[in-house]
Length: 387
Ligand code: GLY
Image (spheres, helix red, strand yellow):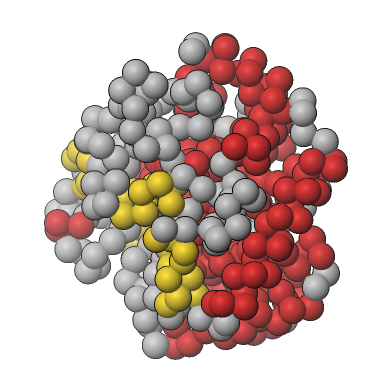
């Protein structure tokens, strides 16, 4: 399929999205969350499911905020106090995590604290959420490397083997913009801007495809080379990496108050759209296609849909909303767990890390979260994002 054909089909499918269709899909999400709440209690689900069931774990991964974010989405949709209470309990657990600096030596602080404490502050005005968000922002800026102007993604701070950023980092930056807004201290946003500019200059290839990660020389700070971690190869396009760019760029431009996006953005979206196979749900890496198939990553499509809905607000891509609606229609009709009553996911057929054999053809928390977020964005166009 060509780019134009894929766009045409998505827009046609998007035309089938009605208010009642959206309500029915959101009601399913809420029911699933309600059911999962019983089993998870005050613990957290694992990053991805195994045979359709999440493992129950403490708050110890980069993905825990997605669960809390889903509780907030369910609260916003229903007004049900039980969702708010559980979300606030989760937020206490996130505070303990900060107090003990427990599994926080990485950059995924925005993924953890924006949809938990950040959403909590916005929805309740509770001051403890505000101070938690500011503490979290301190943890994130502590990973900033002056040599290279970037926030180090993983590993010991300054470890030469881990002297790199990754494309996913774009979603961690809104936390810093929010921290500056709430505190009046520009230091957080200043670091976010520096990191964002470095991302745009490095991990995005000239042809608008993306590397997953990009290394720097620790002595000079010069960018050295791109490499994958979760994609098929260093030169391939990891589908979720491309979708993190589709979402991350308009998110950051919006935080910056821009009225436009970098020129390359529309090509980044084109790359995503032209690599969609016949059912419009991407394989986990764009080296695969219907002739040479592999597993699908439904989560990449949910993330891209949220990105296009953010891009719509900046008029950054033509017919962005209609395209996003088509993506969500296809996921809603073909990829949800609504006909698999034993499955705990919202969205089936995601991939976490293929090379590691992790979460292949399983639901995962970010797929579930962004599917629900996209539905909410479509159902309530003035919904205030958690990022
Ligand atoms: N941010 C990690 C991932 O997308 O798997």
